[in-house]
Length: 169
Image 1 (spheres, rainbow, N blue to C red):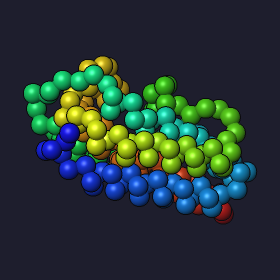
Image 2: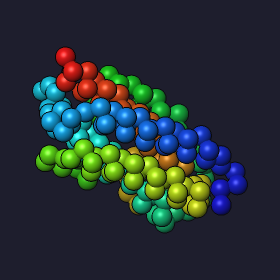
Image 3: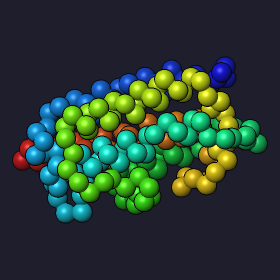
Image 4: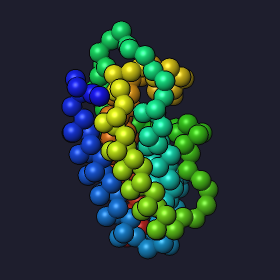
């Protein structure tokens, strides 16, 4: 369905990210997973819960139409913003993590499930479509969101690595 879009690099990134998150989660105890490491931080489990909400593949099924611009026009912009780890951002309410304790099993299963669903569904959607509903990201194509998920997940992987380092001190 996406003859003009090479999804393989993004699919490979999803697989790698799923593996990286799983490895880190497996290294933590349930107590560590649910420990706030420093002031104004989420727990590692809450970061994972945020990612499972943010990476929901539902956007792939959204109504869309052909944009009057390149489908990847905003990819570099999104990468640059999300790669600036010094930049502090606020999460939209609908993807804020739940304020509760999480089990290691549900965290691992949740992260693996969202990436697997993205991998399964990305090939069967028209990624060139511009999403027809309000997005916190503004006017955006499905292909740009697919890439945003990579950059956003990498950003939070870095955050979890900082959390783990703080917990292991």
